Amino acid sequence: MKLLRPTLALMIVTSLVAGVLAQGQNYRTRQRAGFIPPNPQALVALQTDLNNAIDAMKLGLPIYDGFRVRSIHATHSALVLADTAINGAKAFHRALPSVKDHISSGAARSQFTPQQIAASQENMRKGYAFLQQATKDLAAAAGSKPNSKAIRAAADIKVASSEATRAISLHGGQP
Image (cartoon, rainbow, N blue to C red; front, top):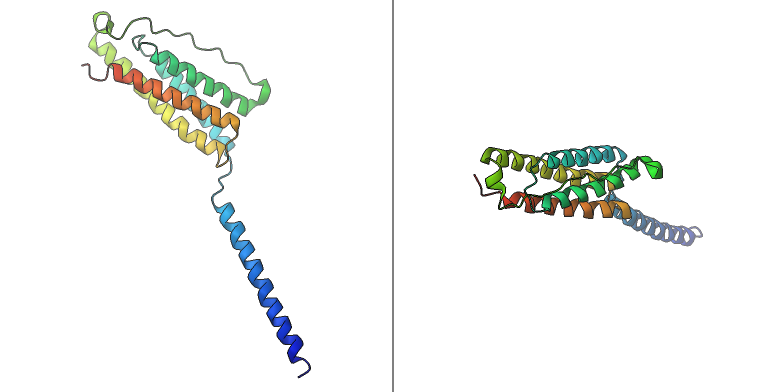
């Protein structure tokens, strides 16, 4: 009988401590379950996709009323951020591509054949596809908590995609 009261008190305290510890572990587990760590290897894929997007869009004809140029420049801006993320402050400084859309979309039919316009459209679509892949690579590279450079790069890629879409739509219905 002398041990009954201390044993009962010890069992109650033990059950309370076990309950509190179990709740704390579940809470921490739930917080960490949604965390995705940054993936540095995805930065190289992002850099490659952005390079490919610029190259593909540069092959397009100068018939997109400035949308192609703005898309290339926004893609370049995101590429510079990716270079900085990979190589640090001493990253190679890429020159801004010098492209111009000096022929209006309305005059394109008189200066280029339908086959040339179709080939240009295909290049623009390839560039757009690379931009879509770059968006996925950036998400993987940044993880679930992106820094300010990743957010700026995402905004640049979004602008580039929007401008590329507008450029493609200018000649989308033409044969």
